[in-house]
Amino acid sequence: MTSALMSSGEKDALRSALSDALGLRAVLSGADTEGYEVDWRGIYHGRALCVVRPEDTQGVATAVKICRAHGVAVVPHGGNTGMVGGAVPDESSTQVVLSLARLNRIRDFDVIDMSMVIEAGVALQTAQEAAAGQDLLFPLTLSSQGSAQIGGILSTNAGGNNTLRYGNARDLVLGLEVVLANGDIWNGLRRLRKDNTGYCLRQLFVGAEGTLGIITAASLKLVPALLSREVALIALPDARSALELLSRFRRYDAEALQAFEYMSGVGIDLVLDLIDGITLPLAARAEHYVLLEVGSSRRDVDLRTMIEAVLGLAFEDGVALDAVLSESEAQRQALWRLREEQAEGQARAGKSIKNDISVPVSKTAEFLDRATAACLAILPALRLAPFGHLGDGNIHFNLVQPEGDATLFVDRSEELIAVVNAIAREYGGSFSAEHGIGQLKRDMLEEWRGGVELDIMARVKAALDPDRMLNPGKLLA
Ligand code: MLT
Ligand code: ZN
Image 1 (cartoon, rainbow, N blue to C red):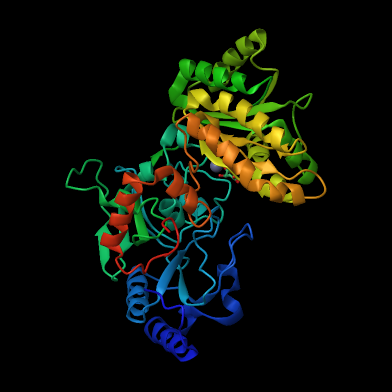
Image 2 (image 1 turned 180 degrees about the vertical axis):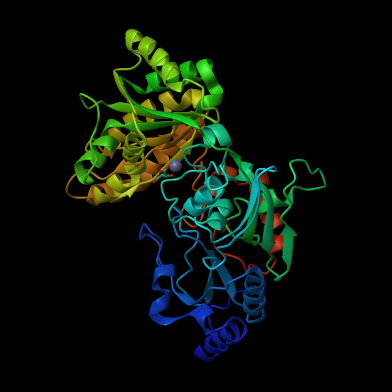
């Protein structure tokens, strides 16, 4: 529906209509739009007709209706922490970016229901702090939680570090409020634990990347706050040992295990070498590590003894080489920084390829070994820095350019991605475990899910957004 040929008069008319309806402050143009036109990795650069920043749901609906009347598409934009270019407009300068940042209210809490209703522009960390203020926990955690907003988190069905225990974003949603492509508002902000009344509409919008509707608020599940918590960093001889350790911890107390994160020696070295103020609290560097966290809502459980018991045996069997347990909250955070700075360490090392692979958990070690060998066979100088949510079978099999010149790396990047994907596919895996499709992986979606599955998606899109008003060019071609 978007016109690639809009006159400047038509663009001015749309900007005026938006500011007349929503206020001058709500519409940004010129240099003020720059921050909304590029993704944080600097890979996608677009040009917006303008940026509109409504302050409430009604304002979002009004903006969508006005854009629609002018035949202009809308690109929803949250904290801009996405990995696949899903929140950036195209280069035509005929799309309006709709920022949800001003919808930042916590609307409601219910301690007995263990739920909260919050707006799309609330940052994840703010949501976590709000829940903590009620002695509850909103259990989604991501490295980008200071900036990532709830609307974007739900629209991309983000995963993160605690999926192992609490599920992905979609598992934490009780209800949604959504502005549809025609400007209608669907108020589905129920907080029911059971509600078998037809199609589960909220799940249609979760993970849809703003292509079916714009999430403006969500009713979210909370869980009891953690009163006991332990974190351990463990050095391992090989990837297989990580899986063995995961099974042993699960056998001991599967409930308590809430993060089981793998990190490669290369990834840890990049963090230690390129980011200030981070040290490795182990006697020697290793080739493989796991960071695990266990937690309980009870104060009287001895999680430390549990970790020490499992590790004691693991040392005897050669499954673990060395380990350190946090002694304080500050140390807990310091250990987590080794994991949270993985992406930043890689970014500072030069160009990188992010592969967001998932395979059945039982195949993660085989996948790591085979993908490593296959990539090194293509480019031996490559720095392989896989890390991620091994407990969920989700590995960020990231490749960092060889030191020095990146030309060969860039030239062979497609081949490298293809070889990694092919191995994941052999295991019945996914090419996008938690980062979504956006612009980056649209072709892969066609390749992997083409046929009946993609046809169903296209039909859902056609039913909810027949004129392709919402985030066109993202997710679906
Ligand atoms: C993370 O888990 O830190 C991000 O999803 C991964 C990435 O930067 O590839
Ligand atoms: Zn991740």
